[in-house]
Image (spheres, rainbow, N blue to C red):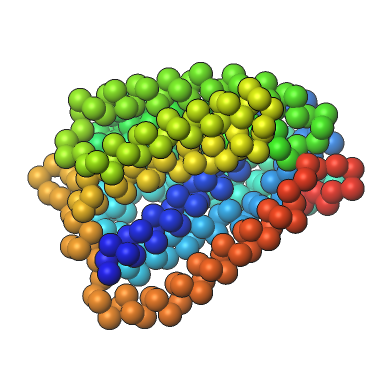
Amino acid sequence: MATFWWCVLGLLTCGYFALAGYDYGVGMLLPAFEADERKRRQTLGALGPFFLANEVWLVAAVGLLFGAFPHLEGKVFAGAYVLVVTLLLGLVTFTASMQLRSRRPDARRGAWTAGIVGGALVTALSWGLFLGNVVLGLPPIADVLAFFNPYAALWALGFVALFCLQGAAFLAVRAPAELTRRAVRLARSLTAPVFAFLVIATGWGFFALDGVTALGAGVAVLAFGAFAACWLGLRTRRYRVALVGSMVLSASPALLAGTLRFPTVLASPGSTLTVGDAATASGTFGILGWFAAPALVLLLVVQWLTWRAHRNPVDQRSLLHF
């Protein structure tokens, strides 16, 4: 039962990175487009129908983590509290700036634009540092500086490149025709740093990580396959294929963190935590089933309907949410 709910948690977490990754990518890429306000609003408007729905996946994942794996939640949030707080600050800044930027038509928007870019950047860096440390093994709680080790720093920079690639691929599909060419150029230029991150992180991890299972190795193969699909999609002008490839690629680090040493789900110097040790009582799983199953189905259906209704690029008739 614990393994099943671990897979559900993995689905929610990977869904969050696959979908919300292009939110942060578009936010970071905003200065790369013209300062013209109309084009800025169209760029952000491409995210409009998806923005809040994408963030729901994180809320659902954290809720399931608290309910199904309370022992893991306690160790993760206590051990990496600095990164968690920084991540929350980035998320709040990004979300608030997105929603408040265009509330007043006559207001100056430079500060809100900076909040979008800065919040997205802090969020990407924080996720990279956090997952890089989870993969490597969380350092002792008292040693805060140890969280900023070179391997985790590589992951932080890699996440920035990953999300930017995903954001550019998203804009190649959803941005107005006049902005598509620039989005494609950005996406193509970002494939090199993303590929470098994949190669270096894989090679470094081969020598630095212990206890890697076949599942963990399989995720690495999946990541390179997703990158190949993204690269080919951009070269052949099949931008939807490129977007799907980038979404799978952005979800791969979270998938790796959950399967790298399975059934060990958290490693730190001197202690480990298995999925069974992290799980709640069996009775709680039964209660969760009554709520989590219909909620997950509803989440998937709403996400699919949203994409179906807004699958075409933004144009002059589109409603701009931001």
